[in-house]
Length: 392
Image (cartoon, rainbow, N blue to C red; front, top):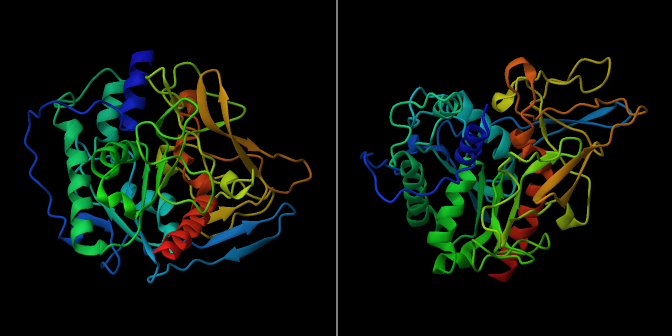
């Protein structure tokens, strides 16, 4: 894989390729008044977020408890989510059918927020994993360079956002959540449609995960002119953004995560755990193999014992994190607190792997950017919701 191919893949997956000046292909508008155009919508039949989120909490001595989950249909705020590059559809642009990959990503990255907010997640015609693989292999699919391809997903999300605002929001506060390509779409939309506009007063926060949010060096704003980075868990109208790398595999020179092109700016890093004064990351890890294109099998969570049957596991005290600035990169550095006396695994999955299981170091822990701090993110959103409602 060449440096240029890696750069193209990273930029496309993060949704950071430049917006086109003009479109060459016409894509008809989706009708977001139809429930089928949404993965998650409160009360929708077949709501992809109305799923089992039960978690086995495993302590250092190997003992465990089961943590149940319940969404709050009367949550005081909303969450609007744009998912990352997941589609395995055969074309350059995905269709509007929810397949296993779309259903799985909302399970991993979104549904848990249902305890704090009503969830809205539109389907959109994204640039597919299939097309990205073709670019990496030097065999771009027909239409992959069409400028309209870079616009159709953004247009879809904007249409969905406007439909949500017009039909469902009714002045409620909203958290915007994205990852990778989804974060890139949200960065564009927030800058163009929310930042400095009347609707900004309804922004509870923006979670821009797995993507580089540019901020002026030493400051809390940049691409977003009037939406600063969050400094406390109760602050509202602010942004949380980070990309994740292991402390044992820091960002290599060829990665496009953790840095931005503008020399006067840097990539934002906000550790959601640190907003509550902690370094321990409250992770919710998938208890299933091969999530989000990872080829690694599910770890043996407790050495010598069969794995639990719940969809998720939580391992208190096993993973810690801090935002660091090293070698020109800003990122969330994850540390595994491996201890021979700890009965639990010393392994967590999350690396992107290639043929033969070779780790793509430039991707870091991109696959679990959301999972690795999910408990912290949900907790912060809950505190922000209380602050927002208290001010109304």
